Image (cartoon, helix red, strand yellow):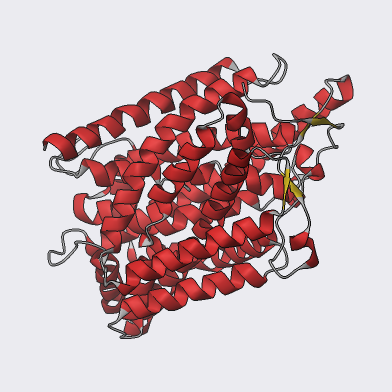
Length: 463
């Protein structure tokens, strides 16, 4: 087990729920741009709502994954990547590689550019993509505190976009559509049970991986709740804007443990209860409503329509149908709203991946304190320039990039589900480690992603 220093502080008293709202909105926003806006609606538009059961399963698995990530950051005030580095010194290299391979391809940003280009009749979506990536770089570089910039943006966009989509769906859907959705939640499709014949396993696995943030982005939750100040995160340093005075200060990535006094243990139990409530309300409940609603909207606007439902064109088909059933401008507004949501997700993805690769790069250097902002912004702009390069060579199939990244992320989730079980049972005392039933859920998640990952790999290798 690799030695990394841990200080010791008392666990702060828990904060009320209203002051903890925020980190789960970031994860929900990450999910909006991949599984919720693109992959699940894509599957619903092509195969119907009989696959809705998998939305519930995928989101529930990610809820339990995220809570084990939060458990670690709450108790130690450091990211879970530091904990993984304590298990094996080469794990940071894996997380750098798997994060870049899973999210380096700018499929989500290109999806947003495609929808905005369609809304404003701009044919060259690559130019829009380049502008979006440059704007993302400016927003993150000049923000005061990175966490607050991302949190506020996602809360505003979700607060506007989700109610708009809910109202639109309830207006367009009739009672029979809701019956079909309810049947799909229990696995009853139109002519199939659970999985339709001919469904692309890669797209299905990708949608499961993106039922929420997906891939290594779930692990970035530990960075966000640390920066929010959950538990021992109160003592942690935070990443500031590049040109802020704070951004030039040293940043300690290791955290603190708390002595297991009766008061600290009582505070821990209260913290655990309130952060479970925050994540359940925002991530699971709001996420499930949003994902099922977007799948239903895709079903009532594009399922069985014929024509081109390949790639991201099914969203444009949705917008066209919305315009015909209401008025043309509403279809354009739908494209703009979903396009902006995708662009905002791309911003949060770039922030999360930059955080992940920064911390793991620093862990590989074996130091304790670093000028983290410079490393973070170097990695951020490398990713931005990579995305711009992909746009510049003319790639225009965002769904292909998203599915490719999602399959890689599903395999990454298989790997770190097992690592989380090991970490949280090794690092915690008996009084703090996960309950047996949570370990069982995590073990089932580990097996689930493992089976589907190897099914997908086999399909690609052997047809």
